Each structure stands twice: as C-alpha cells, then as structure tokens.
Length: 489
Image (cartoon, rainbow, N blue to C red; front, top):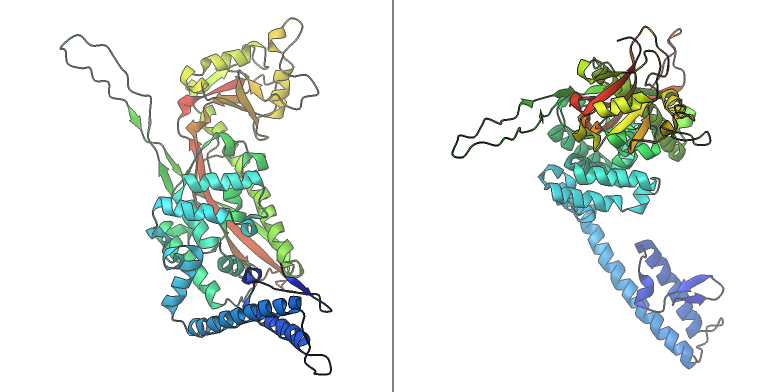
C-alpha cells in the first residue's frame, strides 16, 4: 500500500503495483516527491547525515527501486512521444485502430464482416462513460438494433468515440468551429462511411451519435409510441423498401402416381417509400454556451417531438409525402372492415365479432389499437346482464388485454363512440408484423448559425438546429388486420 508522506498529504508508492494508472505528469511529480522524501531520510535540516533505522532503510530501498522504475518508464515515454509527435498520417490511423480495435482506425468499417461490426459495437455499448446518460431499456434497444442491423453497428463504430462526439458538438453549436486533427479525421471517417452505405439524398448534416440518436434509442417503454413495440421494423439504404408477401402454399392430397397439382403460392411485392421527417429548434446564443446541459436538453426535445410525429403518422398518415398510417391503410380495404351490430354504437357482441373475423393464423400474434375513449367504452360493456363483457373496474387506468392479446393506445385513433351517418374505425386488431416501419439511417442535424427576424431582417441572437430523419410506413399485409367500424355501412 502507498505510504503517506508526512506533512505533504501525498501517498508515496512502496511497490511497482502502486504506479498503475498514473499519467506521465503524475509520474514526474511522484519522482519529485520521492526525491524530497529520500533527502529527508538521508539528511537532517542542517545537512548532516542521519543514522536510519532498519525500517527507514527498508523504506528508502523501496523508494529507490520505485524511482528507478519511474525514470525508465518516463524515458521510454519520451522516446515514444518523439516518434508520435512527428508521426505520418498512416501511423495516426494505425494508432486509432489500436485504441478502437478497428482496422485502419475505422477508416473503412464497410470492410468489417457483420459479426465483427456487431462485436465491436457491442463493446462500445459497454463503455460506461459513453452510455452513462442512457436508461437500461434504451441500452437494450440499442443492443437489439446492433445485433439485428449491421448498418447500425457500423454507425456506432464511426460516431461513438470521443473525437467524433467532440467534433459533432462543435459542428452543431459553433458557426465557425475549430476541429483538431483527430476530430477532422473522425468526421471524415463518418462521411466516408455514409457515402458508402447511404443513399445520396441523405448527404449533408452531421450524423447524431447513436447513443443519443432519438431515431434509434426510442422504445415503447420510453415513449407513448406503441408501434415501436408491435410493428415490423426494417433498415434500408435506398428510398424504397420492397418486400414479399404470400398467402402461403396450398397443399393437397393427390392420387397415387398422379402428377402433383400446381400448389405454387401467389406472391406480392409491397413497397414502402421513406420520407423525410424534419424538426427545427431555435435557441439563444446564451443557451448554446451551456455545453453539457445544451446537448442533453436538445436531444430530449428532439426525441419528444419526433416521437409524437411518428405516433401521428403511423396511425393516420396519408402516405403522400409522409408515412402511411395503419388506420389509413386498413380502413381503405373493404374486406378488412367489420361493422358493429347496432349502427352508431359499440355493443357487447362487437369485440367478439371483429375478433372472430380475424383469420386464426393472425390471432396468434394479434394486438389491438384504439383511443382511450374507445377503450373506456369497451370497459363499460359489462353489466349485471352482460357479465361476460366485464374487463376492468374504475381504479384501473386502461384495459390492456382483450382475448389474451395486448391493447395499445394511439391518441390519433378516432375517439367518438356514437356515429350514426358516417362510418369510422373505432379499433384495429391484427398481427402488426404486417405493418412495416422502414428507416434509412439515423438522425442528422445541421446548424443554422444565425436566425433573422422575419419583419426587420435583423439577427435575433439565436441559432437553430435543423434535424431530419428518413422514415416510412405502410401495411405490408392488410389481410393480417380487421377494423371495427361504427356508423352507417
């Protein structure tokens, strides 16, 4: 254990083990302290040689051994520092690679196999300093994204390092940022990665580091967005996703030695276009100078606004210039509509009716989507004469299960429970793996260096964040859903 230096409060090392974790400057300071202590053991204040006790002789021997080790270690460091100080660009890349575990310092993460990218990215996620701000469920969401999507893993590798994070904060807070050599290389690595892996329409802006990227770390646990929990989610590097759906192979029994019947399935290829979601946040120059609080607050504001927009569009988006919502897609499909027994209101038979209309293979993984008003109406169906319709009593906030399937809320689903002339969808039930959310990359941010007053044309002392993310959605298999419709047929 280190020995306390009397009068100085400095702990003196008594073995080589005590030197672990010291920086070169700390080692130099320690040599000075050891020299002073050795002198105090060897001489009196008057300069006379002291007669040391056996214990003091032992301590002096240990300190001399430690000092010799420190001198050799600093001498080696100085030689290496001279080499590093004049290192060529290639040596710099290799040094970054040694720190990150990536070839060429991560200059070309595309050359990594999917497994290598995943393993390196997961190691980054274990870095407590980089992920200290994240909640456990957010880490779980990012871990799931890394494991399932090599593109997210590679994006982690080029954005989740000190050099890129420092550069990113400068680029989105300072109109004329000064980036050191390491920060410039980090930004260049990100741009090279993006050019190789993303569609050209995503060019521009500075990619938000994955561990604060709202488009990646959001989960249903951290937001009111049920789609992030129940829908099918895919990542693409183009502007259109194309899938394949089929009703399945129709098997048959054929007579002995007869030609097998043609049981080929009918294939369909749904396509979903990604659209650009945009957010703009003006802020004063004074706020921008609060570096730590600013970054945390801005990413939080971005997340809330982005989340709310997605819930809206995934529910009722038109599909023109924006994602198509599940309500828009299913209500437009005549075969998916199931009308209530009594036009204009929900009755006890209606949940059974729409549930029975859903094909059995989709009931296995079904979920319900409705507004709180419709959920309340269903909760009130149970009476003394209709006891089978009882769900939850008043203290419970929400009926979260119907027919052993989860019930989720969207505030953008219709809420009125009594239509008499207009047909409207009250609830949707189905296998939401048939509703696909498509993303192209993560969220990017650009700095607007000056905001000008619209009337006077003079600057307001504000700057702005222009954030954007590319996302689309649509029902990739409408047969997997049924909609309960209130009102006239």
